[in-house]
View (cartoon, rainbow, N blue to C red):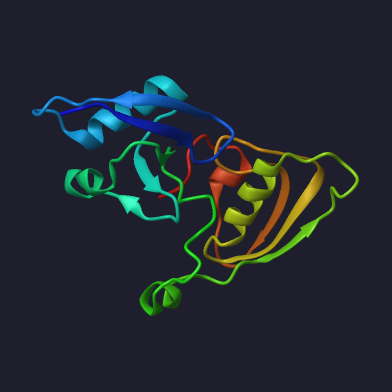
Length: 168
């Protein structure tokens, strides 16, 4: 099997990316091989793979269908896809997409990295999230933004107050 040029992108901080040549052996589990490669190159506990648009790759067959030169793979440490979602979701997908919380940026006079805004938007769609505030010290965290305040209804998210991993 010939090598495939891929770009592995850290899902939670998409400015962290690396180009790799992927050449699995026939006996290798391709999903596990990509996750191990991502763990070594991006230095994250890689558990999920997404392609652009937010589709998750969960089997070696799905991965084989999308593997082509110059493919971008978004590697997640457990969090949902953070990026531009498909423009036209199916009716079934649209029925399960939660309405985002109200986002207020109090950090308008501060320099804020784009990744922090992406994480803020991703957090706004968590179940029960009602209000999301970006404070003047807003900056990207490993999964969720740091320097933000969240108001939820009937939910507590320990990952938003200092836990290391997202809740599944």
